[in-house]
Length: 179
Image (cartoon, rainbow, N blue to C red; front, top):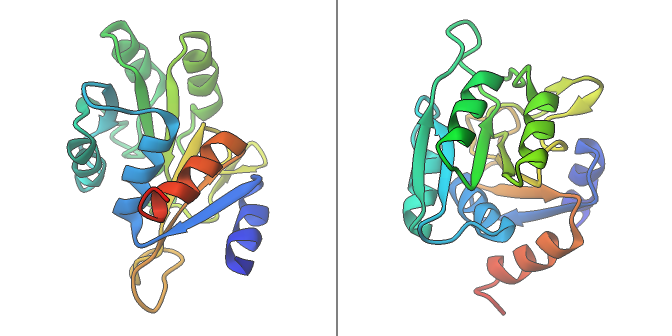
C-alpha cells in the first residue's frame, strides 16, 4: 500500500493498483477501462506483442498502427487513421524511455471522438513531457517492474495507475479474483 501511494504521487495520479506483472497490468487495466470481447484497440506492433497478448485474453481485436522511425513511438496521424477505421480505444506505448510526443493532441482527439486511451509505460518509468509524467495522460496506464525495466523489482511486478475512482475500484476487484 505504501508503494502504491508513493508511486501514484510520483506519477501524479490519484490511484496505483499493484498487480503480478506487466502483462497483468495491461490486461486488467484494459478490462478496467471497458475493453471487452470484440472491442477494436489500436496499438503498435513493435512493443513486444504484450498488448496483443492482453487483447487476446480479453477477446478484443488489435488494430496495428505505425511508429515514427526516429522515436519508435506512434504519432497523431496514425491515431487519426485508426479512428477513421472505427476503433474503440488506443494503447499509447511510450517506448525506450521516450514519451509519445503527440500525447496531448492524441488525448484531445480521442476525447472528442469518445475513444478510450490506455498508456503502456512499461519502458518509460519517470519519462515526462509537458511537465507531466507518462501514465498521467490517459484513462489509465500500465507499468511493469520486471527486473530489466527502468524500475525493476527483485522478481516480477506490475501496476496500473489512474485518476478515476471507478476504474480504481474495478481494478482492486479484478486483481483479487473479482472479489
